[in-house]
Amino acid sequence: DDERLAELIEEMPEEDQVEILEHLTHERAADVLEEMSADDAADLINDLPPETAAHLLELMEPDEAQDVRRLMEYGEETAGGMMTTDLVILPPDATVAEALARVRNEELTPSLAALVHVCRQPLETPTGRLLGVAHFQRLLREPPSTLVAAALDKTMDPLHPEATIDEVAAHLATYNLVAAPVVDDAGRLLGAV
Image (cartoon, rainbow, N blue to C red; front, side, top):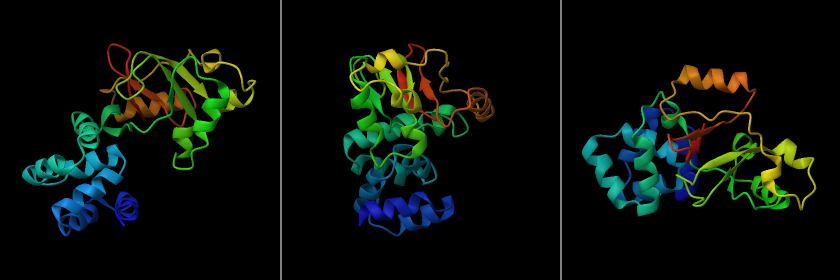
């Protein structure tokens, strides 16, 4: 099915991804791209001929295509080009219990489940202003009824979408992180690396 094919394609080398997508009908290819994470879909679409890429984006669901187009704006070797928009995002009045329930989602990778991003409304990327992140280890130590805003790590600086791959690596190493938020100049959360 489309979901399983998307999972397989995401794990393949780029040349194989393009070859498989070219053997699908455009409608099926668009459905498979919708099942992929937006960052992987953006990378794959960037590898396609421009006219094919434009046609597939038109066939995709508008919300899915919008996320992919936004990620395609950034260079491949930048934080914006490497980030994903599939994050755990909660408002400051959410409880620790709610945050822990969200990080238990089996579809989240361990690195994405490591951080809860606390933002002002709207909670879809790009969000309102990022207030901070809560590490899941810290959340485990808090009473379930505590507001997630009380468990924020405000010492970590977020990344800018134009940060280079070397800057991203240094940032993750400096803070000993598996993921880091990416924000725009207004402090709105765009995604995470």
